[in-house]
Image (cartoon, rainbow, N blue to C red; front, side):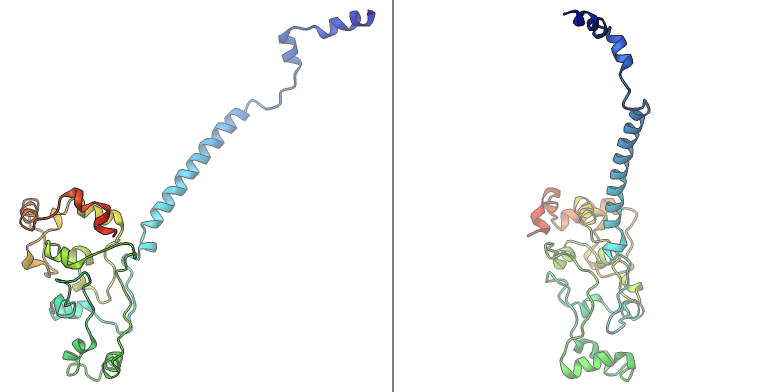
Length: 240
């Protein structure tokens, strides 16, 4: 038809001309904005993970270095430090049981029926002794229920109290000296030699590792018949 001949020239054009006539949807800077947005999103995600990981390991959640208020403000510094009472006098089962044990009120009264027998702050102790009702001590070193920890095996393998509990003989109020994180436990289980000491020094809070601790640790590890590293870091060792 004649009109097709008239319209046909208008429909036929080169690709270059057709592209030139098309409207540009996105500005050229959109590529930069898209790349920058992607980088910022990835950076923000990484930063968020780092913050969450750091928070989980911080004293805010692990309660490390947080002194706990107790019904009776018992001072380990006075009893274990100044007076020099051995840990085992109160924690009688620490060498033979998974738990160190808390002393019965009678143990306190062995001394305090005479010493400071009328002190007001010791009234909860006297009340407990009269009624037979245990003092509601606040637990300081708390592990999750799915973690198995045995005090006696550590004591009998040469790990001193201070290695986990810190300088208890310097604590007016007891606090958690270690983070008690799984990574903290595994660091020692992978390389226990730095924390091994002679059994005569287990309960010595002032013991310091000698200059030849590396050599001494290897010797004690063999003497105490420590398990292999593979066994010490096995999941079933702590999770049963």
